[in-house]
Structure formats: structure tokens, C-alpha cells
Image (cartoon, rainbow, N blue to C red; front, side, top):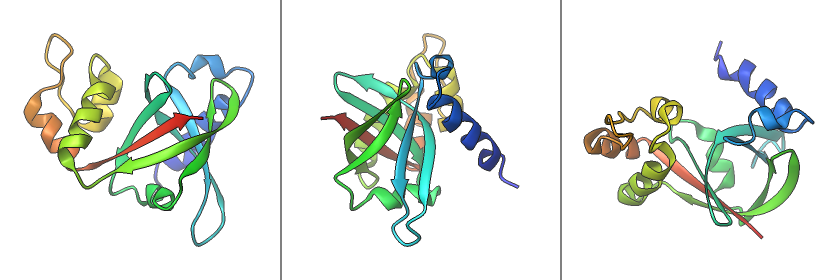
Length: 145
């Protein structure tokens, strides 16, 4: 059994509860309906915030993100609040993916570990591992409206 199938609902529940402050500094939850099934999904993601943008990454092999390809907006749970956001994906330009991945993992050992990016002693990503990881990831960018 995939461990994330057990962990993700717990994290999503915490993120939408009054105790969200334990994780909301680093985790948001995207909410969307499946393209074919119509089933509601809640997926927790680590994020990097810049202005009104929240950038997340997921492995391209995790097929759930393909439900977002045709969407211009979706909903997220952020800091215990439900809000609509614009959504944009990048999965074909590895240089753009690497640039966004750099922001997410710099100085963040946990995100670097999950993204398979080696951090140098100064907290910057190792360029070779960053470029290799970029080939495996999709960037999800959410913009507050």
C-alpha cells in the first residue's frame, strides 16, 4: 500500500482544521474534482510563497496533477482558509521547472529530500541534481485573485 494514501488525508484534515497552524507555514491543500470520475480530491503540497503566488512541485509520474491541465482556477486550503486561486502548470520546459524548484528547495532540507535535490553546505541546490530533478517534476503555480 502506498503510504501517502494514509498520510495525505490526515495532513489535509489538519490543514483544514483549527490546528492548521502546525503545518500551514509550509503546507497548502489543493482541492479539485477528477476530470473523468468527478471525485473530489484533496492533495497536500509544500509551497514557496512569493507575493501572491504559491509554487509547488510534484513528480510527473504522480498522475493526479493532469486533472488541472485544463483548469484556469481551482481551490486551495491555505492557513485554515478556503480560497479560489488561478492555476498554471509547467511540465515541458525543464529550465523553468529547475528555476521554480530552486526556490522551493533552497535552504529547505525536507523539500530537497523529497524532490531528490542535494543541498550544498550553504543551503543552495547542487546544480546537477537540480537539473536531474527538474526532468522528473511538474510545477504548479497558484495565484491569489
